[in-house]
Length: 387
Image 1 (spheres, rainbow, N blue to C red):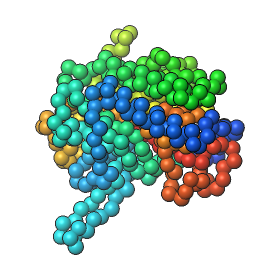
Image 2: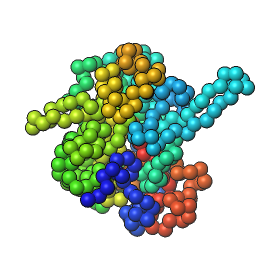
Image 3: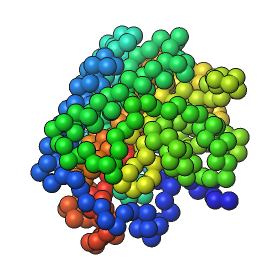
Image 4: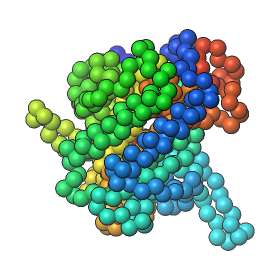
């Protein structure tokens, strides 16, 4: 039996020795560095344009720094293991001081911004969000520097259901499939039999279903196992405690709704109105997350989830008070990794990686701070996401 508790957050890789065994020894990018940059920006432009069209979103700017007392920063996994970069701004010789944080995700800010920009039902916003997550395990999927699209859309109380979530996910999936074909038209080298295209059909499974299939495996290994069978899956219900006593993955209690009870197709009670799109990565032979999204908490489920996680003290923050008092809209939203990794155009991996180095020491900085001969993937570390 593997240690399931140790796998409730993070990449599911224990250390760099284990990572070295996982990464392919013979990886080579299908495109030149020049072609890769062109493909990256072509993919970014295509996805951004079609995401806004499909979901009726407008592009807005998002802050990099927020006030600690606002409560809008994201603590990612609710266990306190991933804390924001924080600093003090003396401001007028400490007469008007401010404690500030670098954002880890814009999830809460977006919902407040829906009201600020006067969004009506069916309207939403999209941002090109940058963040720092200093406590991440740095690997081929994760960096301390995050670059992703974050979007949020106003919904009605009646749309807070699983069917509406699936409809929205399906719209996003079509954009990703179309983006891959669009890139292959301009860059034929991306059509490689070693790296099959994304499937047209996305499989929807609840986290409880996957646990039933692989009861002895921890979360990331369950994901990899199911993706060997279904190359693209949307896993529903991330955050709710499953029958083995663990959530599929820890998820913060104050944005996604992971507590609302739903009924499965076969009549079983299941929980959660959120999930992740995962695909099989033909380069790493592992699961690869493309986007995380969900219907957001209302006043009732916010209080319930904070109670379950022992975080009722969060209700003192303006953001949480705004939800309790109905001052900001009900919404659905998510985060999608931006495509800017210098090796990102290798087959379908082009749709799911981010850009930048793990630390600011130049483009050759890698996993161990020395040249890593086995894989081009290791030279730049991709961003992960969040919500």
